[in-house]
Length: 200
Image (cartoon, rainbow, N blue to C red; front, side):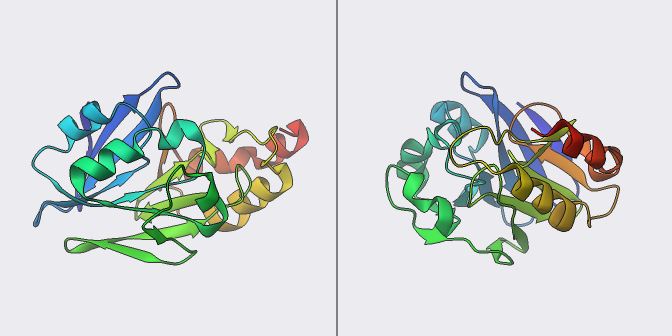
């Protein structure tokens, strides 16, 4: 666990579970109110990182099991409301507390985080933007888009999401993905045509 970013908000990044999922705790420094991005795995580890914070929401980038395995434990321990896009809501073992749609601004403390619908990896894929931080889930990674070679995936759709929703953001936008290392929009944008040619 490390303090990943400290500025307008405080961000802790944790790698959890067998697939090294990234879980992010995003906290308003004035109020201590926070959101968790992706209740992936190892709830005890996430709870330890969240000690002292008032977690208001758990925001799901999508509904795949490796991103949702800790939801039940976190929701029970924290009393936090779980939100997900309507198109992925049926993937959860228990119904979400609220639905997140494109353009929604989710408040925490004196801050708010913007939901961007980025379908392709799953139909209800979401990214969350607190400028200049983009929590990209499995939509965008260093070196390309998330996997689409599964029943819910759609390569053309994820490319369109990246092109029209993410690559319109400034170059210095820090991309914090659902697995692995960080990158920036400016680093990834020049390679879009290569990804399209690669076709996966």
